[in-house]
Length: 435
Ligand code: GLY
Image 1 (tube, rainbow, N blue to C red):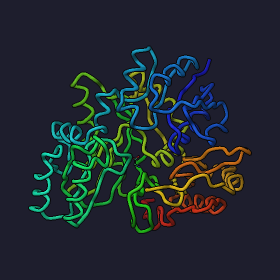
Image 2 (image 1 turned 135 degrees about the horizontal axis):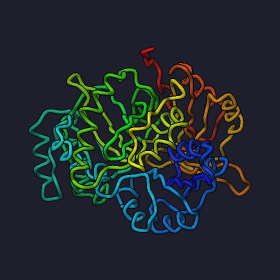
Image 3 (image 1 turned 45 degrees about the vertical axis):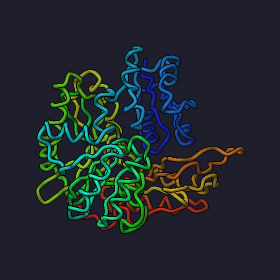
């Protein structure tokens, strides 16, 4: 009998995971909670309306659906301890424990782990609570910018400010520490040294001992072309990253991932799952800006399609502590993902708009060069697909080069329209390729 796999989450990342898992012959069923209309259309897949924060209900669902393993998309349930709770009920999760998830749940904790492990990361000072706001302000005024101000806890990708304006840095620190812009997640802040360089997302799979790197990716965090506008959850991504060749990936594994994963293992809780390093490639070498304890979004939409046939085997091997027997081989040389977002995103997305052209865009996928992922959609009363979030769709083009993958993504995206739709037109533009 084949496997029954549950995927927690409802975005483009989870659509990519369900898409890849549902294609495996060994998978009998994919159970998505809560999924989305795109996920619901996948073969062998069923969606259930259980939100990712309802950990107990998710465990009930996993039990009633007789799932063999659960893959968790978003960070919050991992930080809240979904893995520990599932395990207490005899259920298997491919994801880190609550303790390990602190690598994402607390940036100051991650800094301490990196310090202990000798991992390169920009230096940071930590300030906590309204009583230390004055110290933070003094520190900003006494130092030269640019300033990087980070909320310690989870802030849905919005908890970082980079600015050359001291006044803005102080105002932001005040908003976090006193005005609770991010609730308790921002009570503690980090003032981090600015590190200049291109960024890269390097994701690895690990069983706590063995590490398998996935193809590196780069995402685009700003809303507008040319990296203008506010930070978002991510407006697009591409993979591979030309600056990271095989040798530099080995270096990154040796200097960053191995020491961190070894250090975490020594505390008695080996890290199981995906570990995502948000890196900056400085003149002094790669440094870690942040760790995430799950697949990136939209990085998953470019990484997962590239390695889809290896995904299940890698998860299986990691759960057995045998990742050393797996090598993840990309089946496409390149992938580019462009996100279509709602007007008003990221502050106040306007939703409920009818999406046109989905079938026409899907036609581009017939030859395997485009995959259309739903990110924030819902079905209307007549079965039509409506926008239901800030990021609405993630269109991934695949090809033998970044250039061709990019062309495929944008050509398919041209078919799609909804009121207020916006997307960046410069995703993966001008990326120089090694090959
Ligand atoms: N793309 C950034 C993230 O997933 O956090």
